[in-house]
Length: 120
Image 1 (cartoon, rainbow, N blue to C red):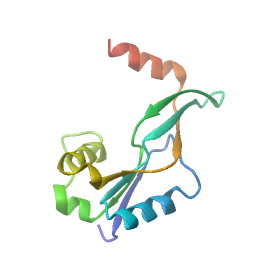
Image 2: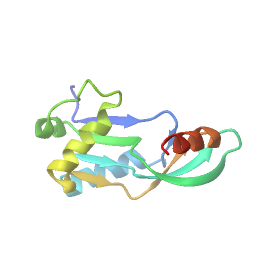
Image 3: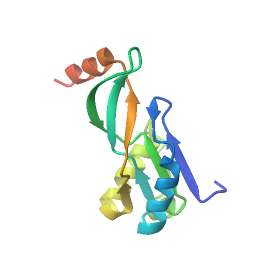
Image 4: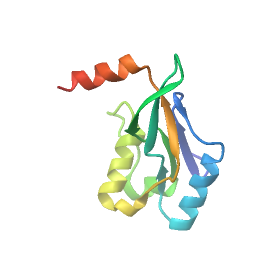
């Protein structure tokens, strides 16, 4: 990694135009090593109608320093940034800043309801 930040933005997530700028400002103001969007409006891409809310982290900005604090990605996990964020939060909850905007997560309603039903 050559830069100071690593950025994860899932292909099915829509963030505000200034999201990256807001994330960098939040990181510089707080000194935290990570910033995430946790508030998501669920929207079906077939009709672009909202049908619910979710709490996720598909928009993540990490400082390079985060790796010095908790180590690198655990390659046993399919989605490494989630597990790395959990390790940061376990060390110090202030190390992960929740960003003050809502993202849109495009997910067909039937797919989302099947996943919820599968949990029970």
